[in-house]
Image 1 (cartoon, rainbow, N blue to C red):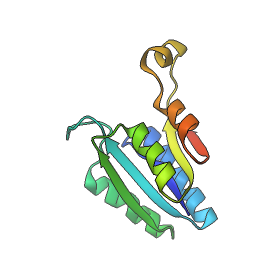
Image 2 (cartoon, helix red, strand yellow):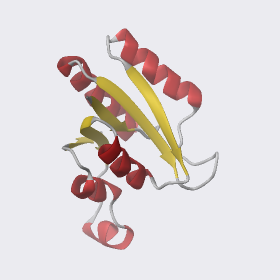
Image 3 (tube, rainbow, N blue to C red):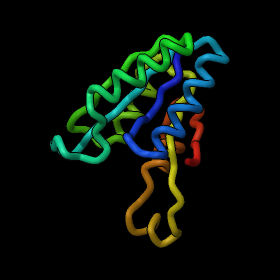
Length: 128
């Protein structure tokens, strides 16, 4: 069993990582750090550098948690997490969220909402 983290390289991603790492250590579970880009671009702000992902795995190991990373290129980040929640042996998905207005949610949709509704396991939404 594992905890699946949807990671983006910003303050929301760091807050979600800290909580996911804490839970994985407390529950004795593996941590799967997922980072994806659906834009087919190497300058996507949601795409973490390989060195950043390696640093997250190293921090997890220092905390006594077994961790690995997964990348999903070409798929929407929300779709990749939802799919991984169905196919991986995940007990929980952890995501970072930001405050959005009702109009912003209506016009742009909400990846967090989709993940909350469609993931096959519990989802923890963490505020930065």
